Amino acid sequence: MASPKKNKKKKVCVVGAGVAGLGAARELRREGHDVTVMEQGGGVGGQWLYDPATDGGDPLGTAGAHSSIYASLRLNTPREAIGFSDFPFFPNKDGGGDARRYPCHGEFLRYIRDFCDTFGLMDAVRLNTKVLRVAMAPPCDGDVRWVVRYEGEETGTTAEEEVFDAVVVAVGQYTQPRLPTIEGMDRWRGRQLHSHSYRVPDTFKGQVVVVVGCHESGKDIALELCKVAREVHISVKPTAGSISAGVVSNHHNLHLQPEATTIDCLCEDGRVVFADATGIVADAVVYCTGYNYSFPFLDTAGVITVDDNRVGPLYEHTFPPALAPSLSFVSVAKLVVVPRFFEAQARWVAQVLSGRRSLPPVEEMLRSVEEYHRAREVAGVPKRHTHNIAFDWEYCDEFGEKHCGFPRLEDWKKELIRSSMRSRLDDPESCRDNYHDSDLVLEGLRSKGWLTGRAPAMQDKDDSDGQERAPNPHTHL
Image (cartoon, rainbow, N blue to C red):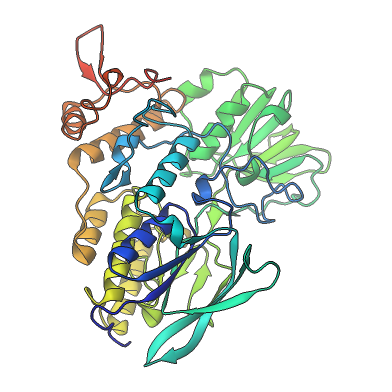
């Protein structure tokens, strides 16, 4: 692999104008690169650009709708702990929008747009531009280059090609549904859809619904469906997330299949039969079973593969050793603080491309990837969870420090996220609106301007004990 030349300005294509792509665009520009962001949608925001329409012709969600956001979705991580490192996710100064700690999806989209405007990134973005193919171009001075084939508003139905020195893949993780294989799925007479195609609960009124999967979207959707459905049954694999018995007992029509009983088959007469031989007649099955990584536009002649959701080989979830640094991925890592981790990845990519940082030899990067995979396998982590960082703070902090001098996440933010995760496990229904902050968190909030200097309504006192709390989530509504 040829070493990057010092301070050489690169022509870089970023695929996707979501939070990862815009973060990458800013970091690349800071390093002096010429950036073009190609976005297939009509606005920036990526996954957070809510679309009430779904894949109507394919309710299982494999026909190409981009966003997986449902109408009622609220963030499950506190706004005070996320956001770009130098651009806090503060509520609007004018008091508009959703000022709650766990705001609706539209508020995060507002934040992404504000970030884009503040750093003048819009002039680098080509909206309504779909990338059809990214493939290696003839090398120039020994460096790998990429030809990007695309079509959009400027080209109409005619595809055009452009050559770039580097490509950053920053497409989202939540576009290609991951579906289970269940006997009878192709013949079952009821309604089947993936959570990717779920938007509102209205059409399930009075029905018996089976929700498969119980991670964040599964819990949210099951609890929302309880308000309109006759019965909601939750089916999950062992160790694949669950919902507390206390929450289930709060709803007469919510049922958790015993001992994580999975679906054995779907029968033509409408029955859903579980692994313990019990069954119910249902009207609908909603699969909240996650997503697959998908890069249909990427042609690397087999160098990059997706095997059971392992994208590889990727050094530190970012660089494919044989094609680095001209090709990189930002946003493959899961269960990290977003957008901070993606921001650190992007800064590393930008600095490597400019020559400020260098990568190890290809053989050393490949060896590191193999050792990482081996360690995960020894630990019993399934291949499909290769990129699941599981909020490993030490790994994330060391990643940023080692590769690009990125600041460590403050301890109070770690504590805030940890307490948020505990609350979601114990009480997924009300945890977003009922919380109590530790002294460490309160001091962090105070020091960073969350409790002072914003607006009078951002101060709140608890009448029962005089304890100062974080902003009341209802104050600004």
